[in-house]
Every structure is written in structure tokens, then in C-alpha cells.
Image (cartoon, rainbow, N blue to C red):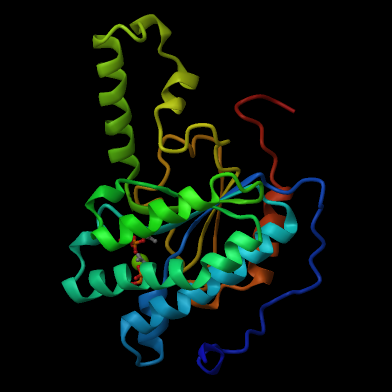
Length: 253
Ligand code: IPE
Ligand code: IPE
Ligand code: MG
């Protein structure tokens, strides 16, 4: 039904040729612009969020097809609790509905449905559904989908620091053991590679507390397209641009 509201885009170039041998292993997306998308159509913000779910479906499929190994989607930040109660509860309901409706398809496609963030603060029905989806899919061998929920980069670092302090106090590690790899292993994304590419639609050019530790050398790509209008072609464009960046990591080529 959202097709009715989606404008036909003239700026889409479907002829981009992606190098299939250089696909980013980990793509992270700040799914932004649902509210503005709805406002432009005189629709309630929640309709924008619903339209955004359809984009999620398409983007997961396309990333899987392209051979992306990890896809992290920023769905609810630690700051998003500041929004009106109605919007927060609509987002939580949408999450449960999404997990229930999409589970079979995702599981059939071999997707690992993982989550990052402090989900203990989400309503019970959400955390229950997330834990169950993870338990049932954790042995799948396809793309790892990280749903970032009640996620904040600073909270993640604080949680990690507390666990490190505890492990030092209990004698499990020594201060001299602390290095970048150890700190990474205390983040929610332990065992995953850092994101190669961070995508933010909607025109904003900020991280909004997303993956602060992991983004040290991520390539950043943004576009004015609102998330519900973000298409497979936009994903191709982002990957194409990424492939044409020179990742020097501080060195010289
Ligand atoms: C992103 O869209 C979804 C969430 C943050 C949950 P927004 O709701 O932030 O949309 P805008 O930025 O108001 O357009
Ligand atoms: C970032 O978007 C969080 C998510 C997409 C979940 P926001 O819309 O909350 O970010 P700000 O407020 O514009 O920085
Ligand atoms: Mg926003």
C-alpha cells in the first residue's frame, strides 16, 4: 500500500556496477527520516515508521543477495525515549509485529536475528520476542541482522568499562591486558567486524550516538532520501561510492 505514497524517483541510477569482490562485510544503517516522510504526505508519523519497515524488508534481502555478512540497523536510540509516549509505544508495537510477521521468512533465509543495546528496558513483550528470535536463529549461517534497540554508543562503552572493571577486580584480567581488542570484546558487537560502511538517509550528517567505538575507520555515506524511500538502488550507490573510497587507515598509499 505504501507504493501509493512513494514518489517515483528520477534520480535513481540503476546502471551502477558494483564490484562483487569488494562488498563491505558489515553495513550499519541509521534508519532516519520516517517522520519527515510522513509529514510531507500529511500522514501521522507512525505511518512513516510503518513504511520504514517495508524498507527494512527490502534492504535485508538485498544485503543478503550481495553477500554482506553483518547488517546493523539503528531502530531505537537511548535518546528516543524523549519522544511522545504514543510514538514510543507505536514503535514498540511495530517491533513485535515485525518480528512475528517476518520471523519465518528471515529464518528460512538463514538470517541470525540478533540485537544490540539494553533490551532489558524495553517492554517485556519486545525483549521476549527478541530473545526468542535470537535463540531460534543463533545457529543459522546466513547474514547477521543486528537490531539496535535502546542502543547508545556511550551506554555501550560505559557498560563495557564497568564489566572490565569488574573483571579486573575479580582477577580475571589485569590492567596490563587492556588493549583495543580487549575493549572491542566488551562491546555489544563482540566477535563482529567493525562496520565498513555507515549509511544515514534523511540528510542528517551526524552519528547520533551510533557505534561510537566501532566507527573509528568506517566510511560514512549520507543521502537526502528519507528511509521509507530508500531503495535497493540507493544501497547500490552507497556500496559503489564505498568501493571508490581510499581507505588509508592513517597510512600512505
Ligand atoms: C527514524 O525516523 C526512526 C526512529 C528514530 C525511531 P525519525 O522518526 O527520526 O524521522 P524524522 O527524523 O523525524 O524524520
Ligand atoms: C537516530 O535518529 C536514531 C535512529 C535512527 C534510531 P534520530 O532521529 O533519533 O536522531 P537525531 O535526533 O536527529 O540526532
Ligand atoms: Mg530522526
